[in-house]
Length: 274
Image 1 (spheres, one colour):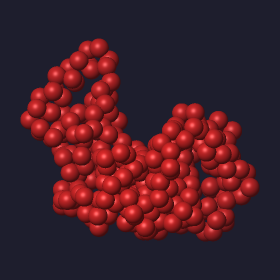
Image 2 (cartoon, helix red, strand yellow; image 1 turned 90 degrees about the vertical axis):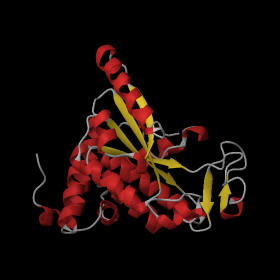
Image 3 (cartoon, helix red, strand yellow; image 1 turned 60 degrees about the vertical axis):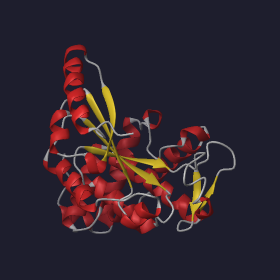
């Protein structure tokens, strides 16, 4: 769905909803396609009463075309630039789909990196499903492996074998968990900027050298997530039930800083902020 598919109508309704939100404290959540997001939409929704779910799906043109999309790459790039240049008070979620046919580890992490680079927005990783009547359940079913019983989550594809799927899904989970902790998010951003690299590449380097205490926190969070009912695995993000305690966050932050120092990253980025 796209609230701004009929642009004029969407903007008129947004003005009305904003007045109601300001007066009565109502929170409005709406979906918008990434290529329909621009400065005018951001201005109309620039209030804490709005939540924008931005449908990105993938940032690989090949993957989008394979999955029946006709991406306007110029408009997609312009929308992401607009989010960087026009900070908004709305809650913005950038929704990426995990395990679409044609998506590789490299292309998925590249897309995730581009979303992580947008300040103030929260990337959301949604797991692909082969819903009845969808392309994944029909003409593209030969390109995927799915759960036999509902919910029919995709568990492997023609370009993402089962073992690699599991490894990448856990890596995405850990990256998003780390980026939810402000001191670690700040450090990862600075390390990526100083090295002219990416947040996911910095994560990979740090993950290999994390101490036992920090690894234990990540392992515990993953085990708790894995024990959720299958129907709740639609998102790869940790939700409120996985919120870390203060002691766990401190142990994880200390572990990340130590790992960065151990491999010479921290000195390059300067001392972490207090």
